[in-house]
Length: 448
Image (cartoon, rainbow, N blue to C red; front, side, top):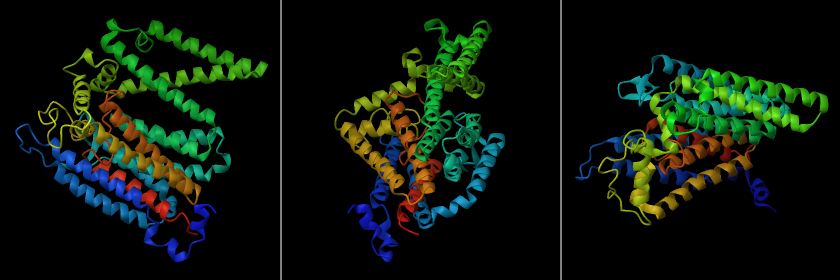
């Protein structure tokens, strides 16, 4: 008999026992938090051995309160959240609007609400609010999950907070909402053509944005693809051509009923949507954010400016070798070559001091979170729980891939934190709240 069936036949008292917790997941996130505190401490040590930062103390406080918050949330029945999911979502949409109008500017983005040094990033918590409401919406429309209106409604739910965050402008946090949407739709059973369309838009928007940025700053050194966004003599024929192609493909589909016409219209519609998103993004993105995209293609075009971060980060990671330089013995961070070293580039410090072997251990810990999260998706008692877990797994996975990717130079720098390791209370609490919700889903998987 399968293990799942055996567990279901267990006594009622056993089902409600403390052993219902996923201790692998709990221990993993606690270990990662401890590692984060240690290397945040390391980031504050200078080459003379002097500690110039108290960030690790704040991280300890946020870590302890986050763990408490995780356990408190895990005791609540996640199904009750559905009743207020819309109100939670609307509350955070309102907070994002207030943040844009009256928030504090930190690192070039108006993304903080608070007084003085005390504040929160509503954009971090809005990810959880969006996941919960999106899960509720998809469950309520499960019978029509393959309908276009459900897909469009899902995009609207995710698109509203994403747009409000983009205009702050915070490109990194905005990007997190796309894997949340894709993971939830895939788990809900949405039409694969819609998911493919999302992937197409994400890929094309990334390509268009990087080429547009390159053309804007270094047009003499690269291809002229960026001119379709800036030169009206190129822009108008380009858009007219796309419009004609889509019209003819639609006409061909109606007359001849051939799938080839559908796919032609499908692709060029994705191009058109991506083009519009790219134009909108360039209205709100700052110059330094655009240069991050340029130096991703080639950091050497501005080695002492926008390319400095990538170059120093890759240098730090590579200098760690197999076994690392040892805790508190890194040079890139302690000589202050590495910018934003306790937040965006905490992985670079870790890799330099612990080496390849240490990063393997770190990858194993992060993999355990993803694996346990997927297991919770599979074993969830209801669709609502599975969809929440899927959204959380999508969010955490993207944070890991993007942050580590930008630290080793294979992803653009977006300022996204490495969950559980990077310094910051809002991102750490968001991570613990997410794990607390998944623990609740896991613990109550056999309850009536």
